[in-house]
Image 1 (cartoon, rainbow, N blue to C red):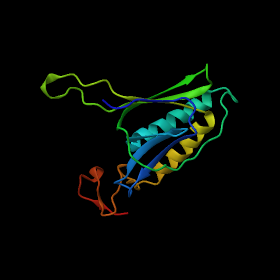
Image 2 (cartoon, helix red, strand yellow):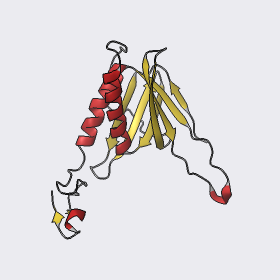
Image 3 (cartoon, one colour):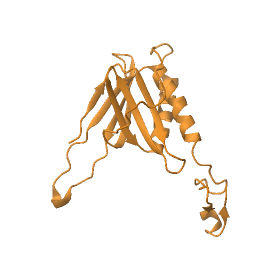
Image 4 (cartoon, rainbow, N blue to C red):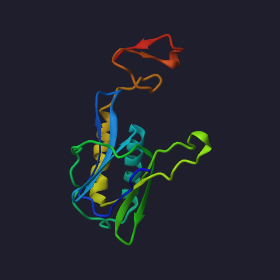
Length: 174
C-alpha cells in the first residue's frame, strides 16, 4: 500500500515534464516545509486540471484567495511516490483554498480475485495565486509538446505521421 499525503499550506505546487516531446513523463509536485510529494501523471491529466482550475478561478469571488504563487520548476529529487489515476478539485470555503485531490492508479482486481487495496491519495490545499501559476505553467508544458496534424489533430512525430484522415496513406512530416 502506498503512502497518502495531506498538504494544507504548500509553498510549492506545480506540474513538469522530463524528456523529449512524444516521450515526456509528466509530474505533479507539491511541497510543504520539508515534505516533497512528486506524483507521476499523464499530459492529459495536467491539461484537464489546468483547464478546470482556470474555470474555477473565474467563478470564485475576487479576493477570496490570496497568497504567493510559489515556484514553477520541478524540485529534486524527482522520485514519484505513485502514478495518478484520477484527480478531483473542490473549493473549501472554511479555509479559503482550492483543494486538489489526486488518487493513486490501482488495478481493479489483483490476481487470484483478491480485491485491490484502497488507492493512496494526495490532498493539496492551494491558493488562488498557486492555482493561477499552475494553469500558466501547465498550458506552457502542453503547448511545448509535439505539433499536431492539421487534418486529424493527432500529434506528429519528427520521423513522420501516418494520418488516419488520409486513410493512412499520407505521411506528414514536421
